[in-house]
Image (cartoon, rainbow, N blue to C red):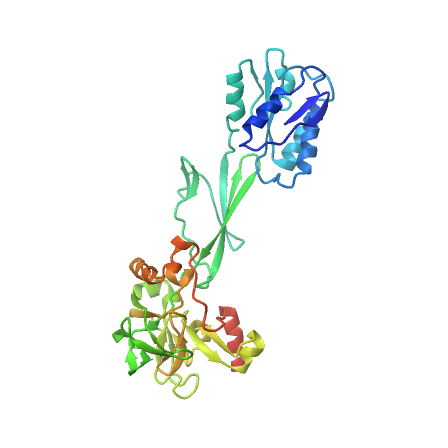
Length: 408
């Protein structure tokens, strides 16, 4: 609350839940004296410049009330220009009583013209009514900072609703991405008059971490096809001995899906790729399934001799290749009480590592089953959390760096 009785002075700062304090301050205003528009708006500028919470990206509103004619200072149009430019401010000018001057107040008002009121109820209506909204002229869509397209009202993409505009199911096609990582999507709304507002969100690309059907897993009874395993079966782990399967599920990816999205293709690791019997026979896993790599160069690069590397980062088009897309593939997931490393046909690979990215890639009914066993993973309990990884898990670019070093 700023008074401009001869000079400008801040009488108090009030939050929306301090109505009683605000009314007490209004009752304490002094009548009479000069009316100095310039001093009042200069005080606004001084107050806002000292307040770090006043954001020039917001629409900051001023309600300017006067019960008389300006008789001190200039017409304050310079101050209005500065408030508009520096603080994106709207000034609603109100003449209180029959003696107020609308001609002078119109020089301050930038919301469509000053109004005069003689009734307290009318005054409350004007103060509490929202300022007119700017008109959206276009929306720019950016992906990772690069402009993907510009849409305008009525083009079939930018749709007007009672709550504002929405982008109507626009596919972001042909954009490079890595499953398990995020892309930033930014919408920049442009308004008439030159203003703009942006909204940015991160989109997580789901991943699939699992074994191909028929994979032989080392159990308490020897090697057994993953298709034949069940909850409660004991599997030999690298670090924690025999561990019971807590949950097992499967996902079928048809050929048409892989043809539309090559990132769904499996990765095939030829027998002996990482040494004799590693693996013993050709092994099929999903792209994001991680293989345990033990190498002194991993310790130099990542401070750990043992690291988990996504299979797609090991593709070399000879011993590690992408699978064909002419037939579908069925993937199996195994979950233990902890993230484990297990023996798959002689090669050490990870068990299913539940986290937000991998859970998003599961069928809805599979997610329900998993959340019953591990409720801490459910988004209902906050951000879906993962088990602690058995070993450091490399990102795709880190894995490629290690693969290049090992190859040389």
